[in-house]
Image (cartoon, rainbow, N blue to C red):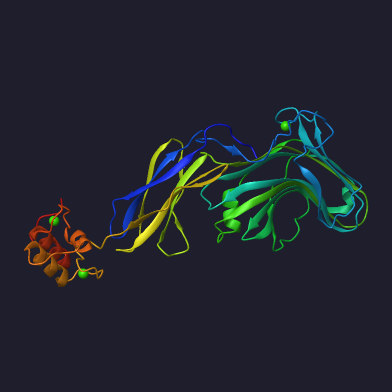
Length: 384
Ligand SMILES: [Ca+2]
Ligand SMILES: [Ca+2]
Ligand SMILES: [Ca+2]
């Protein structure tokens, strides 16, 4: 994980404002700390620019992982190498793979395990980018397909799924299986560097439209080949500046709310936040005279912060004095009796009857309630 040093963000849930029968404005106090407006790079040292041995793989790229039918490759090495006119810095990653295996799909990959790369919905952009270069191929006469591979491992609803960006040099990709989704990664240039960038968020949304939450558990670099027959095949690929980024503002704020007693939260759209301050969202479609709980949520590169859970209770519809969710002549009569001092209303009735919000129930309220009953104010005046 790449951790940013400095001040952490924070969030507080503030009291709801502008309570209406079916809507309320939720407010959060946000401090972005040092996390406003940054691309957050999730992979550790993806540029392969490490001090140390040119011939040793960066330690956090674990492998090899044998793909498909591979069991015992003749050569598999993942090296840090200079001298290939890398697009950035001094070093690139160099994957050497030679195999004499039988016919079928085989491959190898090196991977980096990721934690905390969570997608809670598809609003926050997640971008995967890298440089690729096919460096050397020998014996591809026994091969019907081969390509460089960038593999994303996801945990979707508890299941491991793979998304493979397969940059085929030759042939067709393996048929899709249930847990693997192949994406045409386009063909890189032979012995030249090519830059690829994937809007992972929208590609994953296409693949898993019903899923709102998943995490990325690993990212791997490798090669995949399909052999038509046994025989030696050697393929070397180069990778550089492999980046998985989440952003672009480092801080997103949204609200979660639910009817008291419900188990599932309703989530508002994340707001990208670059400066500290108050943020508010008006939620609609609430039920009148119903208690809700809500909290402010802040998501950033290092995790998710929750504000305190507060409650609100929506009032009755304006004019619905008796609280049956309809305006009828009974509401007019109750308001009239209250305005004339013939009866006292309770607090909820009082709030519903005082439609002009001047703090008391009077004949103007009665006229408006009666007006809403027949569709227009009785005295012909418009609402201020
Ligand atoms: Ca480099
Ligand atoms: Ca009513
Ligand atoms: Ca009034």
